[in-house]
Image (cartoon, rainbow, N blue to C red):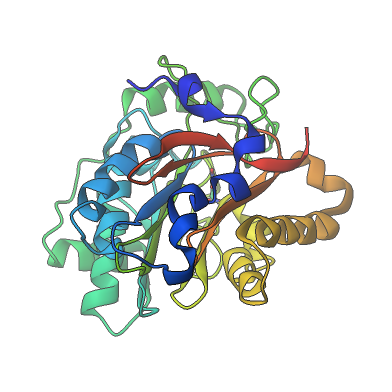
Length: 343
Ligand code: SD4
């Protein structure tokens, strides 16, 4: 198990400095250059997901394949809040959302999907095999089964069952948004600490640039634990939880989805990069916009953006301290603490 602390770098090292500029800078004028691939993804589980993505990228594979393979690792992890091992909605059912987008602006998405292990792969099939972008609920499940995805048993993981039983004691719909100990809260429900010391999150967003300089992204989530049945956040919504424009850059979001949707978060960040802002400045500007809208209430929510531009510069920004992301290139593999506005 990777020791997270070992990999965390001070935020001073983040974004600009990390811009895997270090990797790309000497060739910046001729970027993209073969071998300058990079993958970034949100939260601690990103380290393991990036490894799988890298297996694709290191051999010159396509970014689209990397971002699917990468987050499938997280969807598989039973102790993680992504995938079928995740916390259920308040009626006790795990419902999953995911999306994927490639360098041609093809995109696919599924939401409110039950009993299917790999929503990101179903999202890819929606993109590749239907004339649509988004399938939801029983229709998405029907499509998945028709495509050969097994219908899994409707059963909570041991962790999720424990959490749900605890939650049922009070059935409070509005617990603290920010986990005081970790400061990593990010939605109606704070994350909890795993035995290995990691903080558990219900979402992973991933962006990859392949050796040809093409960008793709994916985002997969169980949404907020104990959410209202039928609730969707930003993660499966193209332009909110994820946006890729192969001419400009890509962004993924995490945190309180309702507030990401409100500003079409990931699309906004990409548009700001199009205007010439660095990834970090673009993320910060979008965060400030959310904070302006929320006013006083901004202190109760967490939102984080993670972006990359076409030059291969990476940046992130969050409302609160505690958002981190994983990065992997052929010379860097680490967790980075995002910059933030509030302690
Ligand atoms: C949602 N944005 O469903 C997701 C939750 C999340 O880390 O990102 N949690 O609103």
